[in-house]
Length: 167
View 1 (tube, rainbow, N blue to C red):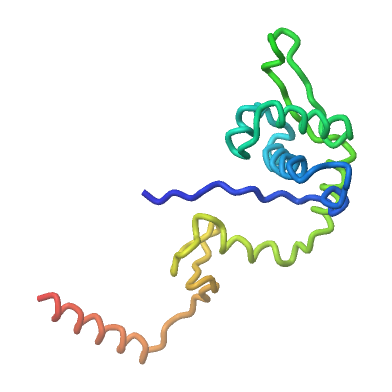
View 2: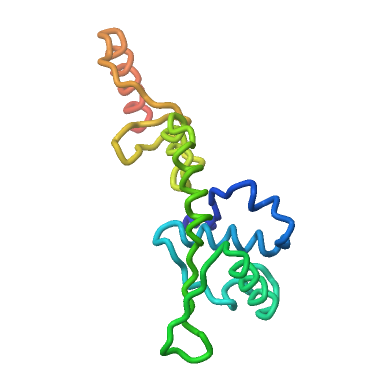
């Protein structure tokens, strides 16, 4: 069975990475949170989840997440009916979300289609088809052309030789 490891692929403003008010762990947690919030705009990852991934104590994770919230990088919402704040939703602050959206909009869209050939399901494949039905060989688009008579003869000759070898 072919399994691929998940990876984090967020877009993050350089101003966040250069913010001296936050620690390296907090920057790493923020990258992880941005990645988790990418699809739905929020995540509900627990301190235990982050602890298991990053190898820090729950207390350290909790302090780091609260510090990010105090600096308005993220918003923490707790379900009122739950005990011990066990149902926490994390969202990106609107300022950070707008910065990330601005980066995405300014990203050079002309190179984005080229990334599809390197997505995780196509890594290490010599031949594959993308979701639009385009065929690729070693990452290069195959242009479909009608074969010439000479090419057809050569192909048939090779097929006949192959059939003889099988017999």
